[in-house]
Length: 222
Image (cartoon, rainbow, N blue to C red):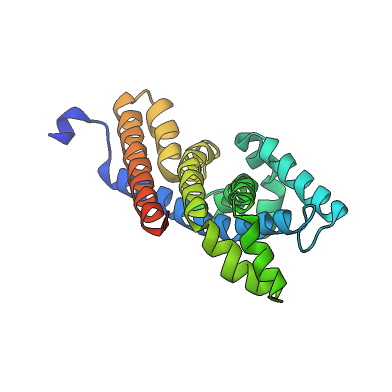
C-alpha cells in the first residue's frame, strides 16, 4: 500500500533519516533545557531587587540572549561553521548540527525560563530569603519547583521548534528528514519523498506536544 502511494521512497533511508532527526532533537533538547535554564536563572537573579542584582551582568547576559535570538537559524548555522569545524572536525552529519541547534534554541528557552520565574509569587521567595535560605536552596527548592509547569511547557515548545530547526539544518547536509526531503525529494523532483518526510515530521511534532502537555498537566498543582 505504502509502496504504491510513495513509489520513490527508500524506506531504509527514510527510517534512518527519522532516527537522525529524533537523535538531533533529543540531544539538543536536553542540552537546551540545561543551558537555557542556567541562563534564565542568571537573568532572573541578576535583575533588579533579586539576590544577585547586578545591572552590568544582567545587561551583558540579556544582550547575548537577544543577539542570538535575533539571528535567523539558517544564518546562524552558516556563522557557526568555523566553530563547528573546530569543535568536531566536520560540518556534515547529525553531530555537526548539534552546536547550532543548541546555541540557536538555548537563548529562546532562556527567555521562557525568565518569564516562568517572574510569575512566581514574590512572597514565596521573600519568605525563603527571610528564613536565611542559601541561594542554591532558593533555586532548587523554590524557583525550579514553583515554575516547573511553565518550564516544562516552555521546553515542549522549544523541542517542537528544534524539530523545525533540524529540517533546516538538513539543507546544509546535517542529515535527518530535512536533508532527505531536500536532496532526495526536492532536488530529484520526487514529491512523494518530500511528502513522506513532512508527514513523519508532523507525527514527531504531535507526539512531542502530546507528551509535553501530559507531563505539564501532571505537574501543575493549581
